[in-house]
Length: 151
Image (cartoon, rainbow, N blue to C red; front, side, top):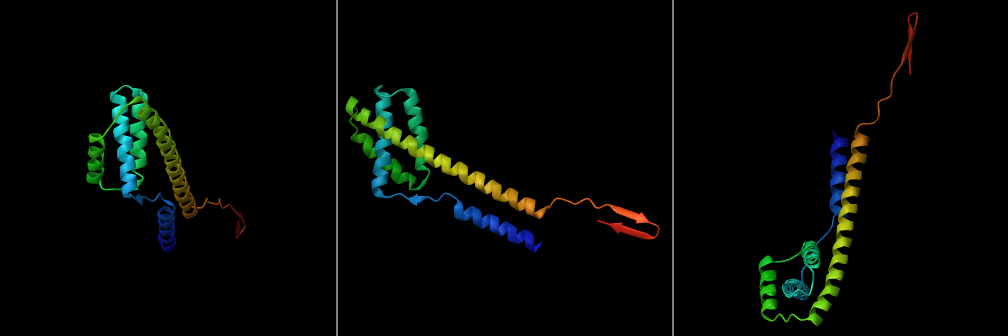
């Protein structure tokens, strides 16, 4: 029983220690995310980016945003402010396309880290489970007269 509890504690702590951590969003990052979101919507509405780019932008944006600790109401306010001053033209949308590739790259990296974390955590659990249930050794016995010998 002690071995089981210690093993679960080790696996639990390993999971906590290697899990993805979130940073607290700073004012500059709020502004950056608000700009990217507003530009994504504006460029799509004016047909400067394709529906696929728009959808990829939303997916990547949402994924990267969820790697931060942030205030949802504050983010909404920042986006609303950005929409009030939004200027959508070909030049701005070309810059936005570049920003989308950076956000997508960051999103892909974060997804890769999360996948590796899950794989490592699952391996830890599997290893622990295997250590708790060692393979059974078949015992054979040979009896000769009144003498029995087993291996």
